[in-house]
Amino acid sequence: MHFSKEFDIIIVGGGHAGTEAALAAARLGQKTLLLTQNLDTLGQMSCNPSIGGIGKGHLVREIDALGGAMALAIDEAGIQFRTLNSSKGAAVRATRAQADRILYRQAIHKRLEAQPNLLLLQSTVDDLLLQGDKIVGVVTHLGITFAARAVVLTVGTFLGGLAHVGDRNFQAGRMGDPASVKLAQRLREIDLAVGRLKTGTPPRIDANTIDFRELREQPGDEPTPVFSFLGKVTQHPQQVSCWLTRTNEKTHEIIRTGLDRSPLYTGQIEGIGPRYCPSIEDKVVRFSERDSHTVFLEPEGLGTSEIYPNGVSTSLPFDIQVELVHSIKGLENAHITRPGYAIEYDYFDPRALKRSLETKAIDGLFFAGQINGTTGYEEAAVQGLLAGLNASLKLKGQAPWCPGRDEAYLGVLIDDLVTRGVTEPYRMFTSRAEFRLQLREDNADMRLTEIGYQLGLVDEERWQIFNAKREAIEIEKERLRHTWVSSAVIHKLQTAQTGSEQSDDRSYSLYELLRRPGVHYRELLSSSATEQPEISDQVAQQVEIDVKYEGYIARQKQEVKRQAQYEAMILPRDLDYSTVHGLSNEVRQKLGQHQPETIGQASRISGVTPAAISLLLVHMKRGG
Ligand code: FAD
Image 1 (tube, protein in one colour):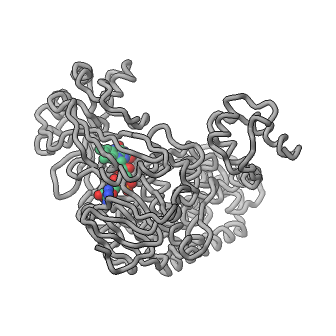
Image 2 (tube, rainbow, N blue to C red; image 1 turned 180 degrees about the horizontal axis):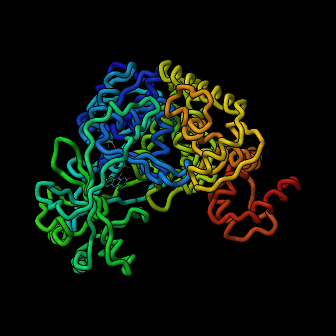
Image 3 (tube, rainbow, N blue to C red; image 1 turned 90 degrees about the horizontal axis):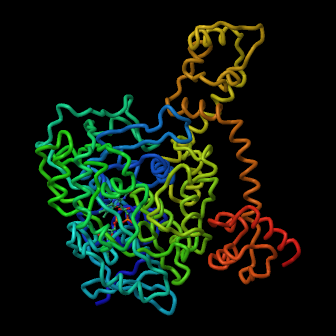
């Protein structure tokens, strides 16, 4: 049967990538259909109930600045908010929220249902409809065909998904959901390089069986952070604490006795897992010198007593899981409500994608999320937003939007994926961004909301609020530049900070004083006895950071300029690297394999050294 209604864009999969993709495409006015296996799992968190963290929080703010849903949803669903790295510089500070997973799903579902131009349909996609190398629709498990001009695939860990608990394995997309087997087979027929990755999750525990008396409590931060630039603390539901405990020598011994039945160590799991997020068995083997690892006991929600023990992800057999949990302080009598498991799945080499996230092989087919070799809700969501946007722009005959590495973590993520590919599940870290001083959580709106508005992603309400904030920041910075105070103000600030006194008879602008280390905006104003304008905390924070970072950012802009020159230097597609004098065989091979489009891209391929780039530049100068 052919479904009578035609769509501009079909999104396959209602996880974090799919929901942002659907919302973005529909916001751009495309007739959009979201097809997903189960409407009850829209926005489902497959693993840890939390959003954000270092690097990831930056992505959430960027999604928000571009009008996406994730930050707004977590503000309605977060049951504990913290600012990580709060004592460090603004560039690496990051928001993290523990989520009530049911409230989170509801917050996403509500937004999808309210979105004009978007229809939802529960169905499993088994096949893609192609005309030559162009996508024209999809076919569902009921044999219904749906026509569309573009398709975004966001099927996460479901392609050929294989779950492992000890020596048992079974097909699953994640626990409780079926794997996508037919679609995986179909995709393997297309000319795309496919690989296997794996990820894992810990067993869940009933809080009623935990002895919290001797465990360390970890409450959320006060004042409570918010995620969205439009968010308010009053939107947060009830806030709760997490708890800390630790593994010990006995735990590690139990794990070691189970290794001969661990699918990771018997070779049953072929897929590569995330090195930075290892299973507990991996940690015990790789860091054998450590006699203990922290375990965070995180509530799964307000309406459940289930606890997520963060730090003991495992695919060991169930009997070993029970023993290892019982060996941990506070968990001696704990009841496991869901076993931990690992999952292996197909992903596609992201180097086969354009920067727009459209596949190079099939016109109109876009990939976003875990299918591209990433891991994490935030990494998936931001790709979804970009793919939904770029699919829409393509249908409108407009150029794709591909932010640079100096504009957004999103730009870093996409460039890393399409240039370098992945060797393990890719997650975002602040260390991946060379221009991180300017890519901060706090200024994501200043970096992206204007372009988001021009692209049609940002609505009028957000645009007006953003403009008012931007104006208030500029007015206040201007006022600080032109408000002069005597050195007595420094004297007051210094006495408060160090107890020492030092003053001269010069006048200083408040702007100049705010640049000094240790001087904070609110304290400066109260010490200066000048006008106290009524400005929000968001504006005050931005003014302070802008002023303090001004010098560093100016220097970073120079580097961005140099890099931009490299980005503009196009490498001929048919360049024969064996003719470039002086390159090592390894570099020649890498360049030939990756076929970088620009010198900039070439410089980011691992193993391509600055010396090799100089040789390439010389070759190009000679007209080679
Ligand atoms: P998903 O959230 O997986 O969503 C895919 C969606 O596609 C689902 O709605 C599914 O029903 C739908 N779907 C699949 N096939 C079809 C089809 N054929 N037709 C229609 N709909 C379909 N991330 C971390 O950051 N840290 C971790 O420690 C971590 N551990 C994990 C452990 C496990 C066991 C699992 C399963 C995942 C883990 N993840 C972890 C990964 C995290 O869940 C994903 O990164 C994230 O959910 C990816 O989002 P996505 O939108 O790409 O895919």
